[in-house]
Image: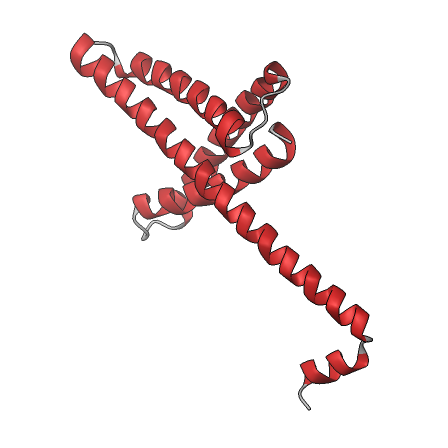
Length: 155
């Protein structure tokens, strides 16, 4: 008898069925979290396209300084991602002023965190290409962003 069979035999039948139902429910919840994370990343990716598209357009066609065109692009991206996450990812449009304030605070805090972690890794891991560091840190920051958004901004 293997350890799992001994464990199952030691449990009354009702407890075993409840444990299996809990595990199944947890798998379903994990799938739902993963599904929402993919939607979250999709919205964020569109936000990146909005920021870079606005920056390139205003800089190349209207002769704006990149500093200002990027600032406006980031503003448009923030508005878009907030609306996208409110309506599509989390489907929570109540108390939008409070949520937007929290969202803006989170965006700024995560930008600082992203820059700090990336800058530190550039220094302590000089043999790793900077783009690899940026991608790894961005993935980490997106998971943090999703978790905090789900728990604090849009709950």
